[in-house]
Amino acid sequence: EGGGKPPGGGEDVRKRSGILLLGSAHQINVDGVEWFLQRVLPLLREEPKLSSADLKVFIVGPDMNHKDSLKAHLSQGGVEIFGRLRGQDLERLMQSCRVFASPVVSGRPSFKTKNLEPLANGMPVVTTRMGALGLHRPVPSGFNTTGVTIVRARAREFADALLQLLLLDERWQEASEAGRRFIEENFLADHLQEEMR
Image 1 (cartoon, rainbow, N blue to C red):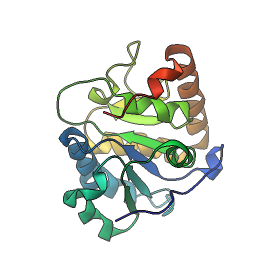
Image 2: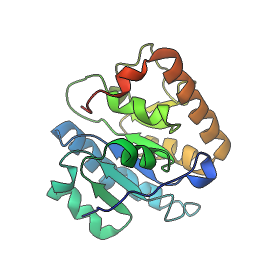
Image 3: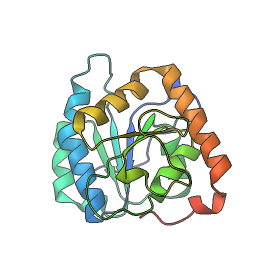
């Protein structure tokens, strides 16, 4: 069911791999993760240039490891589900994964705190317009100077945005640096300590 210690990683793109999804087991988060696993991940798996390490998916959040609908995906391999991770364990995972996916495809719009900590840890974010709500200034769609790539809630678009960051080191580096800068310029460290929603 996914467990043990999450993998550790380095500070640069060559030492990073995998995709992180984060959130509590509220239905909006579960819906987004299921959509990602059913619709987006199969498209990523069609890309021959991606290694099994690139395609590894880590799902983290309170009670996510108890959701039967998510556990069904473990048999395909390449998916690990953790419960709540805090402190060094979560930081270690954030510094080893390459991209943060925030597939918010349903529910009521609300501030998505969970996008901030990955950006602060140098991890570019791919999300939907609904998933980007709450950023201090309007963020344009597509690849931009915030480290957050915003796409419509369409599997192909979401997969393509992830592929750009998984395959192109320069694009990843730009987004990583932009995300750190965006957090430094717009958010206080206190915001990052809020509970995941």
